[in-house]
Length: 62
Image (cartoon, rainbow, N blue to C red; front, top):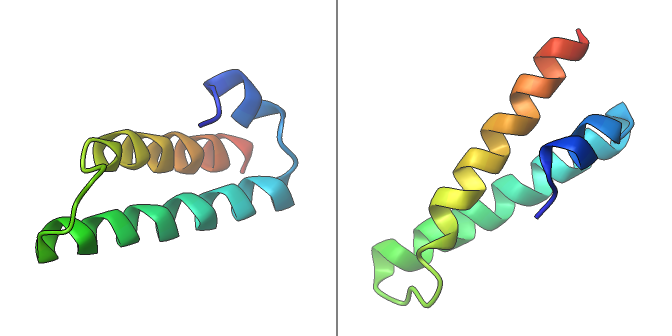
């Protein structure tokens, strides 16, 4: 996962790609948790925070 400083240095296009990647991974983990196949359920919380950080930085840029 990227640190906040690394996120801030990303160009807009890469920032959007990182948001999509994190969102897909978060959704996959959530589906695994709900179906009972969760091996890495602790990552869901970290991904949720990562998504929030990226969205906050996107709003700051605009």
